[in-house]
Length: 270
Ligand SMILES: [Zn+2]
Image (cartoon, protein in one colour):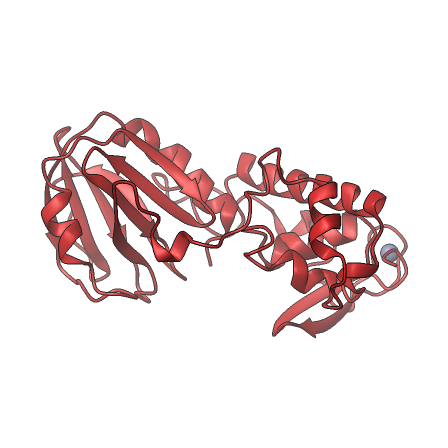
């Protein structure tokens, strides 16, 4: 499933091909995505010039003077800029025709992705109530410490709560907690300010690293043969149950927290 780094990588890859271009038409072959493609997107987007492309959590916002297209990759979606003559595959559900002669193609075998519309001056309900971006300056140890007071939920579940901070997926939460030496089952409210400062730094570090490597799970948006971002051998705990900790040699353990598999070193993480 595409995580924040993959979505950010997609944004950076698409931006030079989309910004300044005009959408001259839409070819919607399958409107029934996770939610049906709304009529507003069909009527408002064509003819508009793309002013910017922004990421919020795992959503992409394609801004125009008429409003913003709100795109989500779901479980298996991808966005690529291709020559307009590229043959159409079974899962190529939507093409935006651009004045550059190219198309922005949305491909999604499982159809959990979406293409929605956010009117000017409004915040789409899917974006309302989201916490800060993990790479922004207002996300830091003090923020985590303040938000966690009185909370008995585990720090792993707390860190993956989108109302606390967006886009820290399972892989990155597990790896950041290991790097910060914090046990994932520890109650969020029992962790000191100093340890949260380290955790916030590690969250930023693992996400930034994954972005520079192109994300963990999604292939590059133009060259399908490129390598994913985090290589398996670079992960310290995620997916390594029973294997020796790379720091101390203790076998890595797995537990389920908030319905998600959680990996940790019982010796390094307290
Ligand atoms: Zn260890």
